[in-house]
Image (cartoon, rainbow, N blue to C red; front, side, top):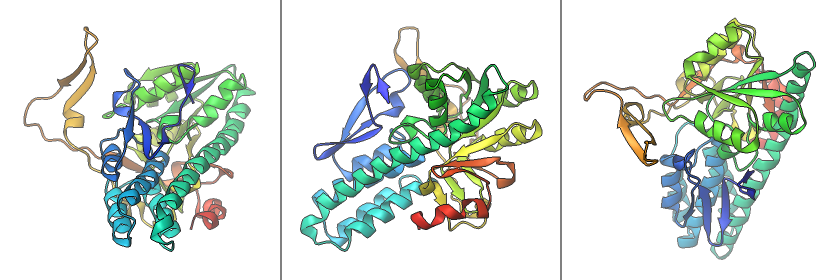
Length: 358
């Protein structure tokens, strides 16, 4: 996508390094960074300089290429993969991409492993873009159908699943961008998505692309649905089970409950690498990341002097729980928008996607 008329991916190869957009500086500053070591790549994932399941997977793949430049032995491959694997526990794309990289590189002689790793990481990144383009086309068909009977289609989002969360184009936002570009009247209700406020990234993306949108508090979505102001909800996902359960940013489950109660279609836009075919019981088997208390206790923004400021919003000593994700049961999901089409959130609906990924 473009920033100030310059095309960017969210991660790219920069010589023998990789470049990223530092998402912790958005929406107030657009800053890119160069990562030169696997430790720097792991740090970028852990601190959410990069975030979003598909992007995490791509950055991890490039991070492994960085690691092999220093140590291309079997030990170096395994140790670096384990370091990256521990950086974020919930998004399955991380495990998927590292497994693919290891299986591609391990059979090769050490002398060719580095180049092979760079090539495979590049393929993972390029494939992600193509998956997202296909998701956009299939999701656009849903929006176009709704537009036949409406003067404007109002879509609710939660968290950020745009180009910043992928290598490019996005998952949940890809259909929205395409609808806007095709002249379909569309407006987006953007959840703020506390505590990391990733909704601000969505608003920044939509503004950059010229898509009409309104930022709302997380708790406003149900009210808007009750009053007929939401025509559909589209979210991304960090992990989807083979049965169609959707693990996404905390608060997604509540949006799905409200959507069900108000007969609002609720979709998850998901590329096939985000589907975890090994999960039977999502509530006990999906590792839900518990993040630090400071994300709840403090907010960061720009003060009246246009300086970045960190402000405490709670008293000292208050107990904090900060689960980063929740699980939306499949029965609350109207469908999964995949690169192969919109499928039911069921084992039978998702099954055709299994073969290319396993």
